[in-house]
Image 1 (cartoon, helix red, strand yellow):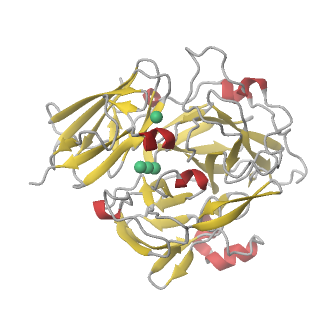
Image 2: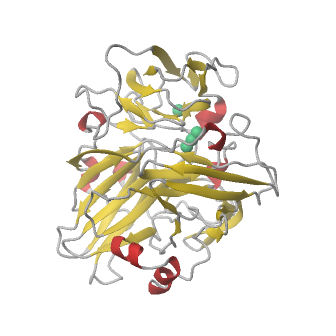
Image 3: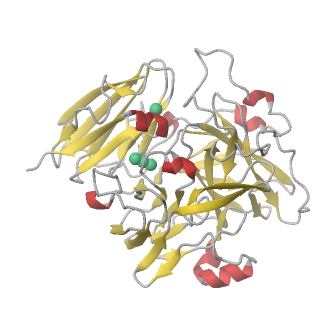
Length: 471
Ligand code: C2O
Ligand code: CU
């Protein structure tokens, strides 16, 4: 397991450099003093300490909670490694850590009162499990709305043999932010929003993932006035790991002057497909390759919330371009209006091996308001499965919000017309009659959460348990 420092411009690793340099050497080489942004190594692994932190939002000091920094330190392993993390709770309330997208044994999943007792203030808990599957994942608190305060970070599992060729990689965590902004600071004035970012006037067509007020959008904890900067040389290929960790906001994502080649969704490989933009529900991730086929310049990386005002961004700067050159804060990449990748575009490279015939177990669920088939967790029936079964889940969404539904402990395959839909752990079900079906193999016994990754909807009860019957 390696601890990789935050390089300031977000979480960046030079592939060859990462392999060649120790974390300390890399930190020195980039002028990053270390400390914040790195999980502290202990003899038995890494230590994560959730606690109060001050987030610097373009010069405004916002008191909040985090794992030392917001986002928390990157955790990076190799497929087949064992993740060892000691959680030491520095918060004034209970907490846990959930490893979003990983499929650990049930007791390591970090869901309070379901898979473990919550860790009290001052308490500790040791997470330890193998991570056989490579991909772009996240970790976050699974207690109440703690994620929304900043208790999240990226978790990368590298394959033993990287099949992709690229020169550098960056992780971009997209977040919505409301906390601590009522301190008199004027955080909401971004010099005028791009008109396209305004709420769609027609409520019957607007894409909306949530309804709360989030005045600020952050990329790697940074507001549009102080964006993370990604760098590369002409001809380079960058790998971006784009992750939506927001509580209440779906995003569109695009890079001005460049197209995106999608290689993974939710960490799982897909046949490469080149698109203008991405759409990410909360909890979803996309890996894309970006070919730096312009000659120079600084290019806007646009992060547009769906169906609500606001704006987030990063900057892509070609080496040699003046550090002062930066697109106007609100410049809108036309690529954002292009076609985003759809699930139908994506073909799984490693689909699950489903047996011949029909599923053993079928669940037909309705998403309505923040209920699942008229029930609100914890007053809700578990979805009972048996080990070894092929399980099919269909969700029909009759509500006005788009719901990104996340299943713990498993990867599922989304049914698409190609018959080779992508393998994911979070899938967005469109509003007003939208439907999504997925299949999975029940190979990881335990009680697993299945819920909307809008954390307000989740805490309102938009949750079911997937429960394995004991043999
Ligand atoms: Cu990312 Cu149950 O969560
Ligand atoms: Cu929802």
